[in-house]
Image: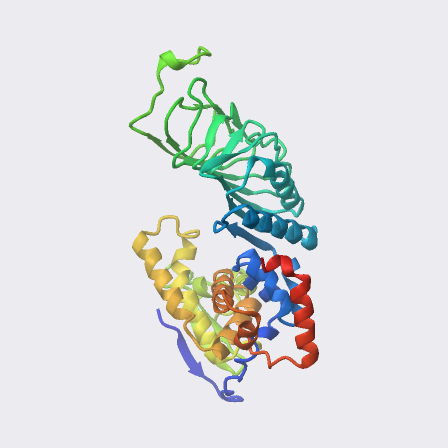
Length: 264
Length: 174
């Protein structure tokens, strides 16, 4: 229904203010919001615009660290330096969302990458998205335990997950977990007491011989696209309201594959 | 706490509220649409804005309020469905088309709209206009961004400060 509009006696209409040149005078909150829609590089570069902007980027509550155009070791080194500077200089200023999407990183970079992730968690991030490709392979994030009282949503892509990464005992606020294009063959367990929505989709691989156990007793929604190898075991989910389970044609969940007596 | 007024869907007619712009124009709109504003939501839940009263909005002029309400009316049905999980792809595409056209406006209107969305705390609109400004400065040089945001040309002192920061922030220019 259209708005009914009716002028009443009073001051009458004022001419629209001529403030087209005032976008730069918007409140800090608004400009932080604007910066959150820019890639991190461009957000940082706004520091040169004017005196007021020098530190503005440091308080933006959303970070998009996305680099897929890196070419050669020199470019990778530049990205490493960029992220080091970015995180160190913005300090522990709170973050709401953070996307870390990088390619062509080497195994040697993993300890640094884990440090970045820990730092981002320290900034009380609520929504974290990790997508890290190394020369076309999934990047192995071994030995990283996520610890956060604030993390609510986690998206993982192109990650080789081990059981430590997928044990969310220390993320009591985690409600949504989305995993795509990742290798879950080293993940014996995926466990979270608080999880409400779990999605494991597109090209995820479980182990060939033993079943991954999914323990999420408070799950409300489950979406599972089972690729090759062993189908996971679901522990009790008494709150489950909706589930979408897809078995791909080439599923090779054969009894002769089992080493652990988990067939049947 | 006052109960919401009668007529709230009981007889099929949607409850209406009246908003009054800074230049004293009255807008009658469905409560569900006006409630996209976090600022107004509680007042409306408490039964405010009905009858002859109206809710005054001293920071929003009529041209801007008209535009804001156009957005709210378009987005209210999807918001009522809890973020529209049941919305079809066609519905979503239509909202996207609407949003794209909605922010295709000159900068003075955009500025007023940003301030209104901010003051009225309309989350979807806040993101839409912030993204519009981000798109306006994306991929531009510092001088181009300054012009886009309406800064005057820098004084020699400001230019020197810009150059110094560009050196200091060399790591962001690799």
